[in-house]
Image 1 (cartoon, rainbow, N blue to C red):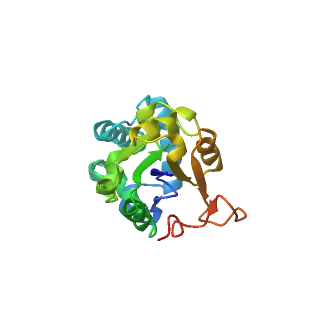
Image 2 (cartoon, helix red, strand yellow; image 1 turned 90 degrees about the vertical axis):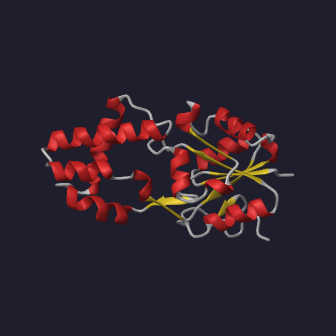
Length: 213
């Protein structure tokens, strides 16, 4: 029997609200979000900073915005606006996410989140999304020092939930992460919201059918 349900965060429970980011940051920057993303991807590995908690996330983003402002000569108002920006606000829940978690809890399953994304404090982002009271455990690659599909990530999640891997059901939007879960004995579903892959066993288009009452 499956005793726990484990969700990936990005692409499964939540998505990035790019239009919201554009509205909040667009007037502060002399370039678009694509160039901002390029700058971030270039700077992050050079910075040597890791996000493992709310404090380290705030330090990461403050250092990035300071460097960006210095590099592009942004004025004090732009600097202040960027330093006030809360990255967790770029996430929004899919409409079927909370109902799926509530169904799992209603049926007696423990619920966890296992995420690879390294730039957001995972507990903080889940709190922003309003999911914290519904979860029994949440682990990220930054917290574990390893990323899916490494076997130790799934095993650590199962331990955190007090379950055997074979008693866990895992949902992710990346095929390699789904296969990684299966290799440690978990039942696993690929969530294909965009409908890019053939349907069939082990593939879902959304979360409405998961543990349907």
